Length: 168
Image 1 (tube, rainbow, N blue to C red):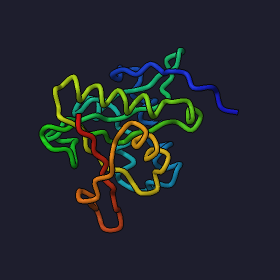
Image 2: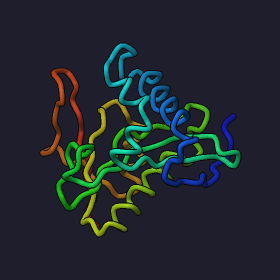
Image 3: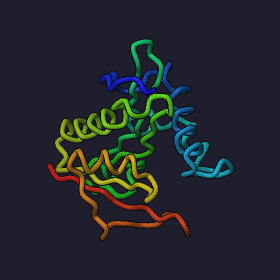
């Protein structure tokens, strides 16, 4: 039985969060079959320290400080932004550990990224997601994101990505 929805604390990652954030990212992407275990992307997922240095790594933690999930946030035009324009924020690598699913963690992380975009005075957000990530799609739709198929793309052959956007 899942725990009831409890608002997790979402904040910028601290050094003590980095290992947990990397493990949660790998667990979510590889464990759910979105990334092959032998893919070079796994090392990027695991390297939360790099994401924290080169972009903004947001974590959701429980009362004991354990990492429940994480997301990488990047303003458009920066190295970690794939599809966001200069006036948009982008999320990458949204991941929630299996034990924390169904508790509002993913939603809280996306809401924090929306808040960060607004704090920076951006006009909206744009980001990519895999077609099979349907649980995340439901969060995006519930928060007001819309599909923007004209911006869909493929970073590598056979890897199709859907784009969602929001205007503020």
